[in-house]
Structures are given as C-alpha cells and as structure tokens.
Length: 75
Image (cartoon, rainbow, N blue to C red; front, side):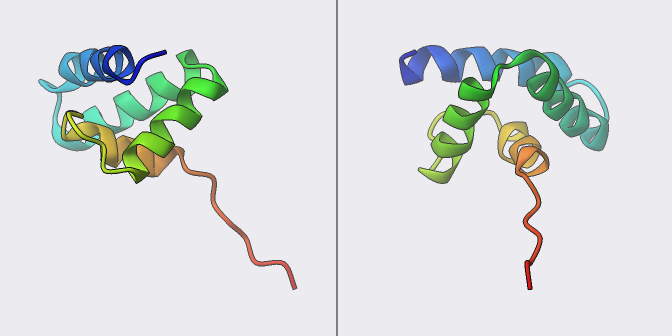
C-alpha cells in the first residue's frame, strides 16, 4: 500500500482512541494494531516510524514501541 493510505489508516485508529486517557489510548492503539493488522502491515509501520514517521498522530510512535519484539541476549 502507499504510505499515504497507510498513514491515513493508522491515524484513524489513533483519532478513535485520542479521547481516552493517554496511557489507555496508547495501549488501545497498540492492541488494535496487534490484533487486527496483519504482520506485513505492522512491519511497514515499524519501518515507517524508524524512517521518521512523517504525518503520524502522536499516539502512534508510543504504540509502536509496545509492538516491537523484545530482544533477549543469547549467551
């Protein structure tokens, strides 16, 4: 999908949750993305945020941090 379409989609989710208390909104966005966005869409979003995230609602980068897989050290 084109970046503009994806930005519009994820911003729509953020606008829905924006009226919630901040922490609840961030969790709501992250959970929605985890449950309803397929892996390639989430990968696109992670890469888009890493590239600067131009045009994204303020809740999105915070929610994306919750989506990132935790990295464990292997010894």
